Length: 255
Image 1 (cartoon, helix red, strand yellow):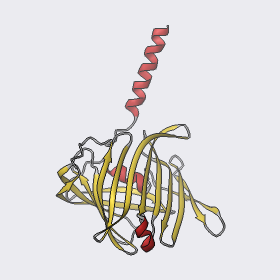
Image 2 (image 1 turned 180 degrees about the horizontal axis):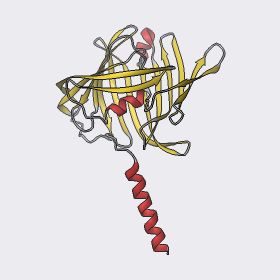
Image 3 (image 1 turned 120 degrees about the vertical axis):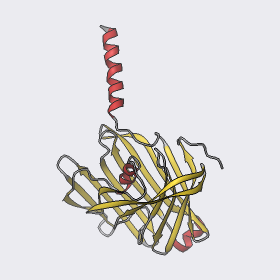
Image 4 (image 1 turned 30 degrees about the horizontal axis):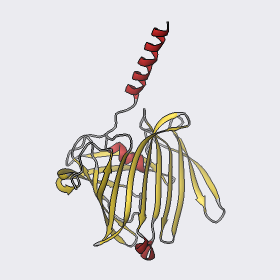
């Protein structure tokens, strides 16, 4: 009887592991970028993915941070943190949180998703009242938040000239977003000279920085689609983020 129970438990564990959706990143992946404003290194940004649990369900805890260096704080201080709790089986978000501090701008917003009911509780922090102002809203099937949408795109097969459609719900809005694959391009990276796909999410919203223009992302053209370069515009101009450190990735860092 004990042998049968042991075998049953083993099969159950194996089955649960197989149920989890395949993702193109390892548990504990951490990508660190140096952010340049013009020729000046202004700060750092990071992307992380690790296993966690949200209300009893296994999730990928996704997070991204952005901060300027102390000397650049005097020009334009940034302290941003964005988080997502992404279900491992369905690859749908349970919760999304965004805290932005950029210059004099402040924002704290949260989405709690109920995919079965196709609704979301949108929580917008009132800095004057020191309370969340809650709004219930309808959401489309399969919607993502801004951060989980990026990781979802990494799971897709993409070719130059094609595009991927993703429904995004953030900032109290539903935003059908087209991710356009512009071209293939070789880039000098910490992994060597590698072929990349240059993609552009056509999203009218806000991501890590308070976005005011187009954003281009260079992903390695392989099964992992690791971001190695990002170009975008912020309130005070444009910036370039270059991957300078990578942990728990399948490639050897050559620098």
